[in-house]
Length: 252
Length: 251
Image (cartoon, rainbow over all chains, first blue to last red; front, side, top):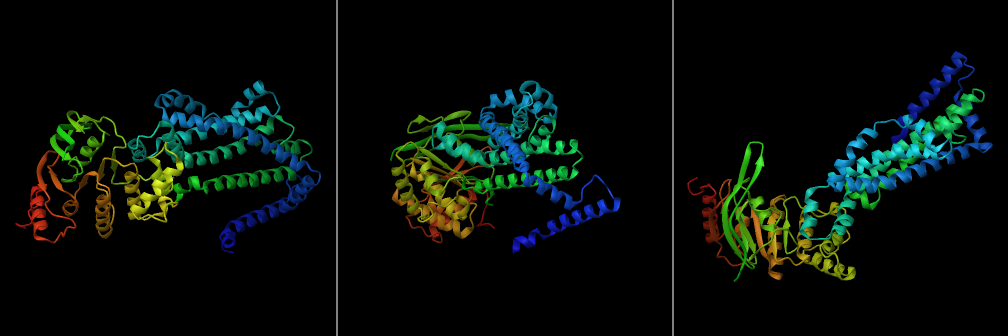
C-alpha cells in the first residue's frame, strides 16, 4: 500500500503522457502514427504469432553472452590494473582512448570481422560494456582505505589471503556498480546493433516493422518493450547490491 | 626485567610543500618486557609517527629501533597496531575478523580461538554480526580481540578510545586493564589524555612540540585498581601537565 502510494506520482505522469499522445493523434488525424490502443493491439498480435518472444530472447541472448564475456575479462583486468601500478600505467591511456569511441562507430569493423551473424552484436556489446567495468573495478581497488591494507599487512598474511580476504571483498561493491553500468550499456547497444544487420532481435523488429509497411504501432511497441526490459535488467542488478557480500558498503 | 624495545636516537622527517618537515628529532627511550608505557604530547607532535616507526610501518632516517635486540624493518603479527580510526574489516563478520590473523591454521580450530577471544572482550553472542551492526564501543572491543587473537608480544595503541564518548572511554580503559591482567603484553599507548595515561600506564613519557623529543618521563608508582582522585594521582597529573605547558597550580 505504501509502495503503491510512492509510485502514484510517476504513474500519473505516464498516464498524462499517454492521454496527450492519444489526443494528439486524433486531433492531427495522422494515418501513420499509432494511437496507444493501436500499440496495444499490435503488441497482442506479436504475442499471438509468437514473434515477440523470439525477438526478445534473441536480444537477451546476445546481451547475456557479450556482457558475460566482458565481465569475465573486465573484473580480473580491473583488479590487476588497480593492484599493479605498472599495469595501470601501461593500459590506462589506451583504455581512455578506446572508451569514448561510440559502439556505433565500431559497426563497420564488427561487420568486417564477424559478418552479419550473432557475433557482430556480441562483439559490440562486449566492447561497449567492458570499459565501464574495467574502470569501476580499477577505481574500486584504488579507493580501498589504507587502514585496512595496513591492518592486513600487520597480521603478516600471505598475498593470496590479502587478495581473497581484503582486496576482492573491499572492491566487490564497486564491481557490482560497474556491472550495473555495463549491463545498461549492453542493452542500449544490442538494440542499435540489431538495427543494422540481423534477422532477429528487438532492434531488427523495429526496423523491419517500419520497412515492411510503416507498422509504427509495432515500432512504438518495440520501444516500450525495450524500455521495460531495460528497467527489469537494472532491477536484477540492484538485487545484487542487496547481497550480504556487498551490503556492508551501503549500511551507513 | 629484560628490555623489549629500545629506541636509540631516532629521527624522522617528511618532504612537504614547504621543504623538509622534521617530525621526530633524536628520541631515545626503552621499554621493558610486559611494561605499559603511555606517550603523551601536544597534538601534531609526531606521536603517531613514532608509533609507526616502532611497529615497523616507517623506517627512521637516523638512529635505530631495536626489538628484542634486533631491528624489525617490517610490520608483523608480533606487534599489532591499533589505530585511532579502527580497521575492523567491514566486509567480514566479527568471527571472520578475529580469524583473519590466524589464517593458515585449521579453520575449526581458529573459529574456536576467535570465539574464545570474542568472549574475553565481551562480544559473546555477536560473533556473526557485521561491524556496521555494532556500536562504537563494540567495534573497539572487536579490534582489540582481533589483535589479541594472534598473541602479539606488543600492542601499539594510537589513541584507541579517543573517538568514544567519555563514559565509554572510561569503561574501555577498565576493560583493557582486566584483559591485560589475564594476558600480559607489552603495551605502548599514545594518548593526549593525561588521566588515561595515569589510569593505565606503568610509565609516562612526555613528548615536546614538533620536532618531538622526550621531554620528561614519569613512573606511575600506583597499584591497580587506581583511584584517580587520590592525592598521588593528582600530584602526578599536575606534574605531567606542567611538562605539557599547562600549569594548573598557577591557573
